[in-house]
Image 1: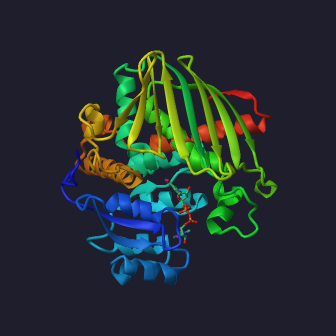
Image 2: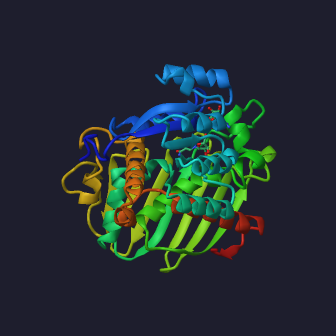
Image 3: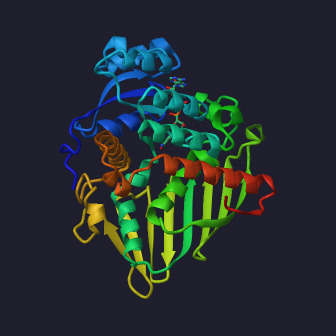
Length: 391
Ligand code: NAI
């Protein structure tokens, strides 16, 4: 079990772009990064499009006023002049800004932790991957719940053959927050429903990429052969983007997948649900009850496994933070993701490529795969919801 003890030589000097007072996701980043006092120190930021509000916010977080910058360009330039300048920057801004800010940070020699969906195209991902590789820098991506101990438990059970051959992958991430029209919508909805600021998708990128990455963590041996995506905007002003989509998947081992993402699932608050069905047993996990994992063996009474209990696999217990009996949730999962990225940055700095080969964290490959999946979904949907070979 983790106790927040030192895992890298010293905390990383960390800055943020976006994630200011009105931002939805910024606090999750700080919750993740600052959970272990030993992993990151927040020392600078360009938190907000509104420079004055961003400065006020930053100083309220305890950051020196001269390190609360008006723009990300000023942050990069200002920090480069300091001996104790930032080493890693998190980007918690709307999708259309990710590519330009990530590139600028990498070119200035800074590691990056960027929000999903990473960029608009695989070509952009590949360009950034090359810059990061050439500069010896890490790019991390924040797929929120993928660091939860029961997600690792599912992965360990699959790896140890406890489920048998995987047959069915059933995933859902839905809510009803966009069931009405956008006439009085706030900024976060406005940019999400405009292709120029959101990219080629709305809910597929906004929430579907979480499902796709988590399935990769649990089923790393499966590859998608083909998929069929049907997408629709129930609120027509959101077209050509979708507020609802269904994806059917054929995997290379013969398994079948069904995925549902929607922000018009009126009244629903369940959020994410994953069910992996094998020839011997099934597991099911949902963020509505993140402490519990359903484990069902045909012909036996169903079991509810609890996080932190000694009967779980070592891979799960090793990353548990709260211990059994006490709720382990999204913040703990983010803390694991941030810690894994810090360990990757630390290894990169030390030139420890052997560590990086086996170290598990959502990096540029995971971000690229998310964008590749979106490209395939859009290709299928825009061809009239037809099967397409996965490219
Ligand atoms: P938001 O619209 O609520 O907040 C965006 C923030 O970025 C605001 O503080 C805004 O002032 C600031 N900002 C915008 N452009 C900026 C710039 N050029 N420089 C500095 N600051 C700038 O957006 P939200 O919902 O927080 O989403 C941000 C990103 O996080 C998106 O890519 C979204 O997909 C992702 N996201 C990820 C989640 C996860 O679980 N990993 C959850 C929610 C959002």
